[in-house]
Length: 284
Image: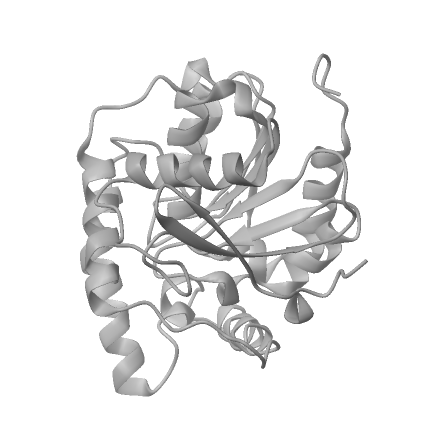
């Protein structure tokens, strides 16, 4: 049983003319945890300090969205279409019930997915994200381009600016996170293209400008997490989702930004594992 994400082999599966690249690890059987990745992210962008300990207890599956990394096709123009792709991928693997772990854009996809296909999802983890129509989400385009420029000028990964506070706490956490993303050395995926990034940014902006969804319709157990100073998706939107999703749980980490769950992985992972381990009546 492989529980080291850096060594997980890359597999492929085809559905609807799209070949999805994916990796899986952890014990087979039970309800798998499907990870939905962030803006401009491929399978290499998951933090091993989050993935590996979860995979010691659960069957974990990551994949690259259509048109990203080793997956074929073109990037969808809406969050809802990305959710449809995620469902097609899950169905191709043959699962009738899954847990969803979404981060940032991936958690927007998770919201669209569970609202359209509620019987497919057992539990939700929504990190660093906000609801459709959420105030401030449409500004993510300007923030992203600004931090890409900052990264280029300083020869640093833009995620150091986008995900972490630029202070004595955030800077070393950012460096450690970026180093962890380099742990996998074999069969790495190609970075997202500029065109793919632009399309994803448009989809996120439109999500922020769209009509709010009925989050009260989400009856699945839901864990919401973020840092208290998220520059990409305002932290207050985590509270908004918490108040709208019945029975949801909220964790906000201090002195941290969009990547709060990565900065505080030692605190977040036990919370996520306890949440995932709970029995859900009628589903097991």
